[in-house]
Image 1 (cartoon, one colour):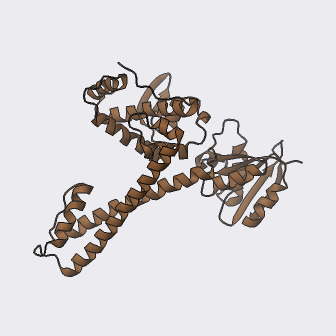
Image 2 (cartoon, rainbow, N blue to C red; image 1 turned 90 degrees about the vertical axis):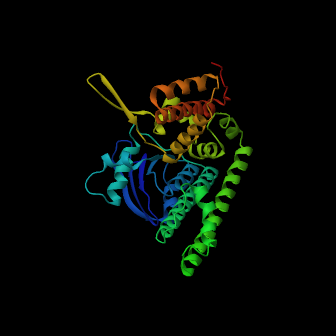
Image 3 (cartoon, rainbow, N blue to C red; image 1 turned 120 degrees about the horizontal axis):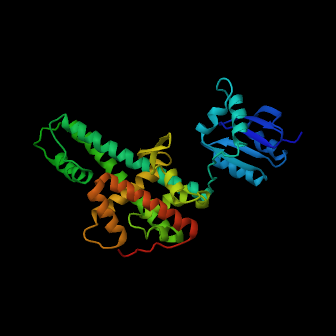
Length: 339
C-alpha cells in the first residue's frame, strides 16, 4: 500500500502524521519528533502533503518540496469541517489529510525565504508604529492627570511635549518630569527606527522592477508595493482581478437566495494589512483630485458626489486591486487614460 496523501499537524517539537493510500485507507498514524520528521518523509514516495497555515508552515513547505512532495497549506477554517470527534493532534492530522485531497480546496501559496524576510520588515515596522501610538497615548493620559493637555495629532503632540517638560512653572513634579522625559526619549528613538525602516523599504522598491511598475498606480507607494510583492507569491493563482480583490476583502458581502441578489458591505476577509494600505493610499488620491481630467479622476469625483467619501475610498481601493493584479500577472505598465 503506497501512501498518496499525508496530513501533518504542525507544532514546535512534536508532529502528528496521518497517511492514506489512493483508496483512502489508512497506511500510518503516528507521532514524530522534530528531528525525525524530514528523515521519515524522505523515505515516503512523492505524495500530497497537507498542513494548516500557521507558524513554520512555509518553512516546512519548502523543505518538503525539496524532497519531491506536493504541499498544500490550508486555512484552519477549511480543515475544521473534516475533523471527527474532539480536537486533538491525531484528529487534526486526519482532518488535514482528508481536506488536502478535496478537489476544490483552496491552498495558500508557499512563500520564499526572500518574501518572508521582506514580510518580517513590514511586521516589525507595523508593530513599532503600534507601540509608538500607544506611547503617545500613554503620555497624553499621564499628563492629563496633572492638568496638562497635549494637542490632537501625532505631530502636534510631539512638537508640544518638549515645551511641557521644559516649563518649570506648570506644576509638574520633578519625578513625573524625569519619567516622562524618559518616555519622550524612547518615543524619539521609535521615530528614528520607523524612519530607517521606511528608507529600507524605499531602497528595496527602487531595486525591484515589479515594485516600480506597481508604484505608477495612483495611491501605491513603496510600502504598499513591497507588501504586495512579499504577500502575493504567484498572482496567476487568481483567475482575474476581481478574485484578487475578493481575496483582499474589498468586494461586497453577498447574500443571495431565491434568485434575489443582496449586496452588503465589504467582506473584510483576507489580509487586513494589505487592505488597510490600499484604502489609506486611495485617501491620498482623493485629497489631491482637484480638477484633474483623466478618466480615473472623473470617475472618482462622480462617485464622491453620488456615494460619499468613505465608499469612494473603498471603491477606488477595489479598482486599484484589480489593476494591481493585471500589472503583476501580465507584466503590464499602468497607463493613465484621458476622460
